[in-house]
Image (cartoon, rainbow, N blue to C red):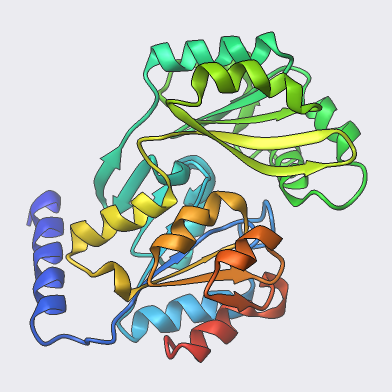
Length: 299
């Protein structure tokens, strides 16, 4: 059978199963990666999380990654067995081998954004589908500002650079479409002009802001977010959003947590996100996914 036809047949069967006498308790589970499925910047979930994902799928649930990472950075996790993913904070979505949403920046948006951020002394990392490209001096900035613990997102990016998770110097950028820009600066006033010019088209999602002079965030196209990623997967599969459960830990998970039928924040997560969540899950390092999957009858 031709691969595309085989995939289409699989989805038609799955939708029919869900709507006609299948397991009515079947859930669609969405997992953030850094700080949720794995420790920040890592590509190997703890054994308890690996078992939880495997057992949930064996029980008939569908498990999706839902992450700010681009495809290149999330791809190592797919080896642990997932039904699909929402990548680039909702900008690139796959259900098994089928692309169901693909929304990179236009080249005009990309050029305008980089010009404004750099004009204001803001470090940028552009994320494409297959590679990420960072400004000269960004690694040194991270090394200086990340000497102390306390900024998980900052340390995650430092590890990405040092461990070469396909984060390349900007001069190696080959023109591939860009989905998201991660930015870092020292002062809030540096963001004033970019916000005024770009906020109609892009959300400024601030991940971390601390007293060591680090403001760390993401510029995300207003056409998508993780919450709308959840909705797009549900529409594609014919599953009610109320039958979803989502796990996250940081501020780019807000829309996902608010959209899902049940939104779960990790104990190691953002204090703000905890207030919005339906449930607080033990930390990723304390077998949180396994314990909460068990609590909700997913395994």
